[in-house]
Image 1 (tube, rainbow, N blue to C red):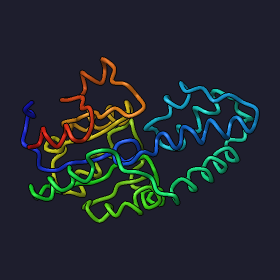
Image 2: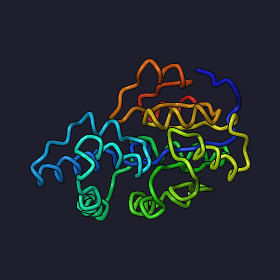
Image 3: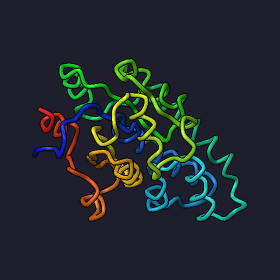
Length: 218
C-alpha cells in the first residue's frame, strides 16, 4: 500500500511494539493478584494497555476498590518484571530489520512511551538498540500521557519533523488514539489487543508485524 505522504521520521511505541513486555506485565499482575487471593481479569489488564501509570492505577482501584493496596501491588509486580528484564526481554519480530532499513533511508526515529526512562533502559538496554533512536520520550517528558497526543507531539518536536510527516507505530488502542490525534500517519501492529473498527478508521494500516511495516516502507 502507499502512504498518504512521504515519511520523514518514525515514532515507535515501546512495550508490545519493540519488545515483548506487555505479556510480562500481564503475567506479573495476574500472579501478584493471585498471591493476594484475587482474580485479575484479562479484561482489566487490557483496559490498562498503553495508559500512563496513574491511569492504570485508577483502573485497578476501580476494579478492586479504593482501599486496595495498589502501591504494594505495583511493587510486587515491579519485582517480577525486573527479574524478567534481568533475564532479557526479547525484541519483537522485525525490529532489527526495520531499524536497519531506516538507517539506509537516513530517517530519524524516536520512542514515545508511557513508561519511565528507567523502564526504557530496563526493557531495551540489553538489546543494544537504544542508541539507534535520536530521541526517547518517556513519562516525565510530557504533562498528559496517552491517549492524549502529547507524547507523540513531543517526539516530533524533538526530531524536528512536523507530526503529519511522521509515521507512528503502535500496538495499543490508547497509543493509536494518541498518535492519530497528533496527526501522524498511524500503523497498528497488534500485540495483546486486536484491531477494532475504531482502530481501522484511525490507522493507515493494520500490520501483522514489523516485517510488514518494513515491506511497506520499501
